[in-house]
Image (cartoon, rainbow, N blue to C red; front, side, top):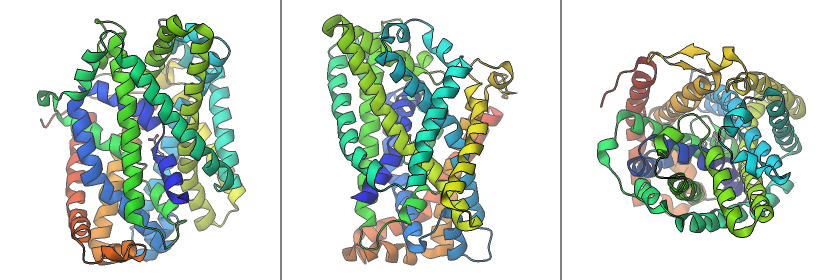
Length: 460
Ligand code: PFF
């Protein structure tokens, strides 16, 4: 139960509640959702299992693990890339987590109406000092937990808060779906129009799936290294993937119809440009609710909901900080407290670039031009490189490693350890076979991403 909670805590986060609805709206709705779910179970689940297996087999951080399984080769660079991705992803993730925390503070102090007002999100993210405070608070909380060890506190809270998040999510879905125009949103979300299936949809679906499952950068190698040999890797991995997808899907069920209730003129795709979607839509949902239940109660519900998202984000920032920390502790022989402090310091410094890239600083807001001619901010570029491009590369390399270097026999042996019936079963045949396919699929999508994002070339 401990492993499942920690891994699900890592998986369920802003990627589910902020990322999934945003990417769905941006990529035309239902076709994206279907491709996403297919990729999660066909491509990502095998990577979930092999990351956990590598971690448990070696009991080491991602770099140490690959060194141990393939001594004297360059494969440990894949682990190093994972550690670096962890730092870079956390650097922008924590800025967004800070926004959620800020939205919680604003709504708890009576500012819900302001949050729901036109243009407020832009003003909010453009204020550097406030956001520095929010981001700093989040970093301190993350650091305290990573230094103090994961056991006691976080697991106990996860047990209570995760189900509460689900209950609130469902209650809000029911509320939104009974509003006018919500059904048009539901149609956009659930009735696929495959003519909208472009190269970009495929790329986004794969990278979003990797991000949401915390895959491709060794987070699950790290967590797997703490897992007992008696536990069943297959069922644990499957439950994590299922819970994560269910929560992402539910968040979409709330946010996408909610966009449509804002009025017939609102275009889902337009609203989802930039990272602000949920920050624009959620306050409006709660303001709308205030008409029925009163402003105070609606503010209470909004605060509570943003607090729950904060908590989901916190269990993810912990795992993002844990990966580089475990690396520094094991490979550099530095004490845990110092290692976590150093890593958090680097992350915060890099994070300033993202913090300032939403209007506060012209330099970071218009950091580099893309081939499409558009100038992009530091935060978008960090996301494009480390989340959208490199996580699937990590998955490609780790599955290549498992298929051709570590060998599927060893992979199966590790799963069999906690699940004797696995040996010789159909499941074993399936996963041992699919591990050879995953490198090709992810490699193809990687090329596709590079062409589309950085060269503006559309393969289809
Ligand atoms: N899975 C997290 C989310 O969906 O919010 C983000 C994440 C956490 C990505 C940990 C990668 C990671 F190692």
